[in-house]
Every structure is written in C-alpha cells, then in structure tokens.
Amino acid sequence: MAGTTTNFAIPYPSSTDYVTDGATAMRSLADQVDAVLFTGSSSGNLLINGAMQVSQRSAVGTAVTGLTGTAYSTADRWGMNCSSLGTWTQTTIADAPTGSGFVNSFKMACTTANASPAAGAFCFVSQKIEAQNLQALRKGTASAQTMNLSFWVKSFQTGTYVVEFYDAVNTRSFSKAYTVTTSNTWQYVSMLVPADTTGTMTNSNVSGIEINFWLGAGTTYTSGTLPTAWGAVTNANRAAGQTNVASSTSNAWQITGTQLTVGSIATPFEFKSFADDLRECQRYYEKTYDIGTSVGSVVNAGSFVSSQSTESSGTVNYTITFKVQKRTASHTISFWQNNGTSNKWSIGFSGTDSNVTPTIPWRGEYNIVVSSAYGGCPAWVPAQILGHWAVSAEL
Amino acid sequence: MKYFIRTTQSSFGEIVSIVREHNGEYAHIPLSEENADYCAYLAWVAKGNTAKEWIEE
Image 1 (cartoon, each protein chain N blue to C red):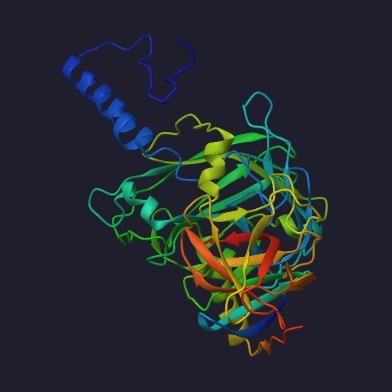
Image 2: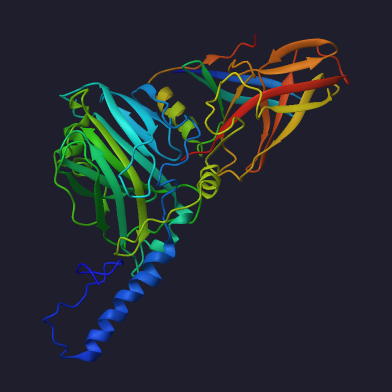
C-alpha cells in the first residue's frame, strides 16, 4: 500500500483513523467502488485515438504546414479550428512522456505569430464525439453523470490553458482551466466535468459534445470568467484566461493520452491495439493508401482496380465497398490517379489510355457507386478503371 | 480554397456536387447539411462568394 489512494483514487483511511461507525464506513467504500465499476470504467474512453497512434492523413513524423483554418490533417479524429490567429504546423510526432506507455503525440507549432489577436480570433484543437456515443452520460436528466478528462500535455509556453466541453446539440458549454507549470515538460492533467441535468443528448450520428483544447483567442472568447457549471453558451466565458500560444513562433503545444470517461474518477488509460483504434477511426476517414503513405503519393499499392464493361452510354460504373461503415452517407470523397494526379482516375478501353473525373451517383454508408464517363468511349466494350480514393465522414 | 459546382449526366440521372480545391487536392462534397464540408461551403457562400461552374477537361 503506497500513497493515499488506490489506483482508482479511492482514499485509504489514515493510520490514525478510528472506525467509529463501521456501517457508514462500509457504505462509503461501497459507494466509491460502485462509482468506479458502474459509472466510471463501464463507459470506456469516449474519445477515439486518444493515444494518437493512428494518423492516416499524414504519416507519423510528417509535418503539415501552413495551417490557418479548420482542418483534419494528421492524427485521426483530432482537428484544428482556427480563425485569424497564427499559422501552424501540425504533426503526429513520436514524442510522449517517458514511461507512460504512449509513443506519439499531437503537436501544434506556431510558425506565424499573432501576439495581439483581434477580438474575434480563436484557435483550438478538438475532437467531436457522436451524440449516440454519449448516452451513458444521461445528459439532460436528473441522473446526469459527471465526466473525467485526463491527458498528458507539453507546451513551451507556461500559463493557464482552457478545455471547453461544448454541447453542439443544445448549444451549452462548460470550460475548465489547467496550468502548464514548466516549459516544454510533459505533465499529467485530470479534470472533473460536472453533470448537466439540462439539454438532452439526441441519439443520432450528429456531433454531440466537442472537446475543445484552446490555444488562444481574442476578447470575444476570453473577456469573461470561467463557469462553474454547464450553461447556455456565453462566448466571453468560453476561453477566459487562456494563454495565447500564437504569441510567438517559439511556441508549440502537444497532447497525448487523452481519455474521457463517465464518472468522477480518472481511470487508467485504456490502451487499445492499433487495429482497434484504426477501425474506430475508419468510421470517419478511410483511404486506399497504406498506413504511412500520404494521399496523392505516386504508388500502385492499395489502388482500386476494376476490369469490366462500359454500358450503353459508354460509361463505366463500379462499386467501392468501405472496410468500415461510415458515420453518414453524406461523406466527402477525393480521387487520385496512381501517378498522383488529383481528382482523376485512369480509364483504359479499346487500346486507349486516358483519365477522367469520377462522379458519385450513389452514396451509402457501406459503399458508393462511382461512374466514369469518357467522351468517345464506345458502348459495351471492355474497360479498366484504376485509381486511389479517400473518404471523409468527419463531424 | 476554391469551390466549383459540378453537374454531370449519367445513366443514374443528373448528379450535382460541390468540388472543393485546396492545395491542389480536390474533394467531391455532397449537397447535404449533414456534411461539415458542405456547411463550410455554405458559410463561404454566406460571405458573398460564388462557386464557379465546373468545366470538364
């Protein structure tokens, strides 16, 4: 027995305690165990790719530069949302706290500074959680549950940082601060998020709660005070006290080991296999290219190939089946030829090799029908289609 | 960031989508408010911008 609590943060009695009411003591212990077993661990991690081990859009170690707006660029499910506040380089980087079990982290490095943000400027990194995955919170009911967010963070700039929990269904939010005490040093943060008995969480595939790690903002978002409970969104309170990471090109912010669980206790991180994390990520983004190969690369490995026939109009139609059901059929699709040319696929027929911009007449959660029409392509002749694709169903 | 409106005919009928070009990468966006990219397009239009008609090469 070491320390003052168990691994699940249940407090040990001190050596000088006397048990004066055994029944009350046992009831208290039972309640705390129940909190862990019933409302804590049972939810698992509500965040996907919390260890940053999946990075389909850009290989680990490959920096994506010149970022200024809203984009998913590196580690799956983690996006940036910035406006008029700095230019950033984003990387899934092989850097994590020693001895933590983590290998990678998500890094935002400022490359063009803005030390005096306009009032409406902002920048944060976020993960949006599907509403239907949040039902264990019992949000908007009398039995609403608390949450606990834990993560490792490293930032060049010390000071106060804000995490915002934004209920996109009911336009409500709660924000809480953490402090980076030592420059460029990994530190563990755990924060309790109060229950919200207002605002029922819809049971669908829309964005439910968005976890926003603020990196800076203008007075529109910082001029108020941090709330102590959930409430209707008040912009001035959303990032009150937030340090401006965009103030200098020396600044960089990293995060890993992110876990959000139902219950009041920070449970140990739920390490998953790479395959499990990848499968969860592919509900939101999938590509033909191998892991570690960026989209648009000049490569044949993974390419879609279909040899079939044109139809009466000279069009070639074919089905692409996804490995994992997508969050929505309203997804966004990009195409590349194997030579890296964007928005084209190769088509071959009757001794002719050319390229064509594909069309998507049918979109489904499990597959799509792609149609390629090339002018002059005759009816009912053998034709081959060749190319890569990437599909995004991100929130 | 550029947007184009692409209308094509196929045996499946007329197909309309928004094509977004960003850093040389093109993405086909459906006309659906369930899609975050389409919502971004609508916000772009709301600022007074107009997508060009896509011309097939």
